[in-house]
Length: 90
Image 1: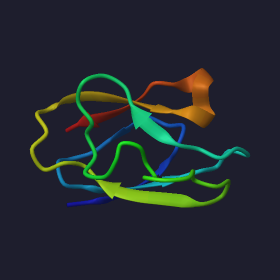
Image 2: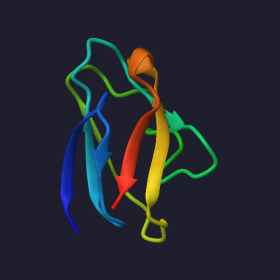
Image 3: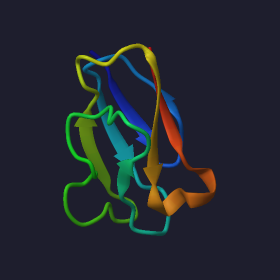
Image 4: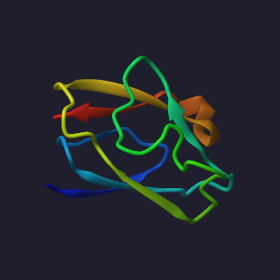
């Protein structure tokens, strides 16, 4: 398993079970929510479970272990012009 540090407004690639730390590099408070029928993360939705990710702060979770290989969308409310975001497995 790998650890990924991901800018909250970027797409990324991961493998089942990988840890992801979302980094909020915006000037706004952010929340990650579901888009589509499959939520690819172990925690949530949403991430974080309560409140928001403050500017300059992070939130961590893992990809689920039982994900089929495909591209999974999710929404980031502070990046509306760049959403949905995608994690591609693998």
